Image (cartoon, rainbow, N blue to C red):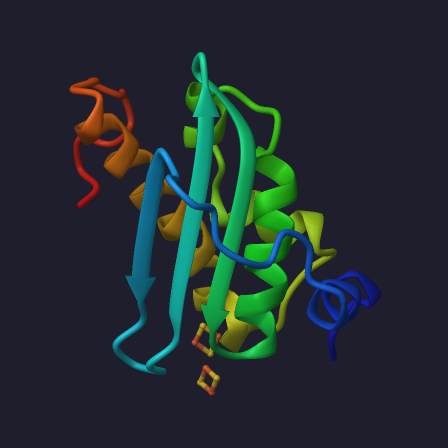
Length: 132
Ligand code: FES
Ligand code: FES
């Protein structure tokens, strides 16, 4: 049912934890399943130099947040904004249909943290207009 990559990121999640004095913090939840995802970004000169997450949720939510942190680390803020839940699912070699919403949570957590960063720095980031 689950790919080796999903199992790997569920059993050995990368970048778990918090960042003190993070430049952007995002928190999102899914009302249906009650899962919560928190994402912390350290941003230096427009580049995501560190990222950590905490997920209170299902295995797929943990796996998607783990791989999402790997996908945005070292990227610019603009590049990270392009991260889609579909890209996250592809990077994990797929997720069962009923678990796709977990990957949406990962995309939203990244966007929520970027929005927080943009607000704190009075930046307008294209792609976040509709996100709140
Ligand atoms: Fe059970 Fe998300 S629904 S952990
Ligand atoms: Fe809700 Fe996975 S079951 S995030």
